[in-house]
Length: 147
Image (cartoon, rainbow, N blue to C red; front, side, top):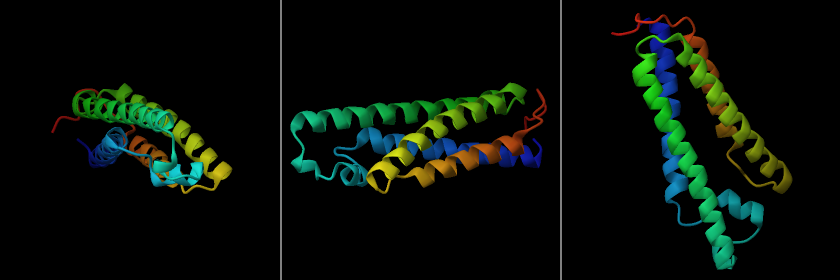
């Protein structure tokens, strides 16, 4: 595997691991995140039980999506990427940019609307990392990346 492809692989791997970690955090949380409290303007205990249930369900759904995305990235990295399949770099990049672009839109909209400290800057970091991973991984050639 060429050095630049190894760097691209490593960048994508970091993003996949960060995505899984974020997914675990959201999926296993027992109350809303601090920026959710800022946006709502109430503490967890002040919310009605039904609202708590809905918030946790939405967080679990987001967590499930993040976990799925992270594990799919790992599968794509460790099988077709390592085999040098040219399409996989585009698949990881386009999927990642769409997902993180939408997440940026949502988190930045909440930040602007409520002045809550949402993690939009982390989502921007993901977007930059997807772009870097893509650029380093350009020119994958089938069958030429196995080490």
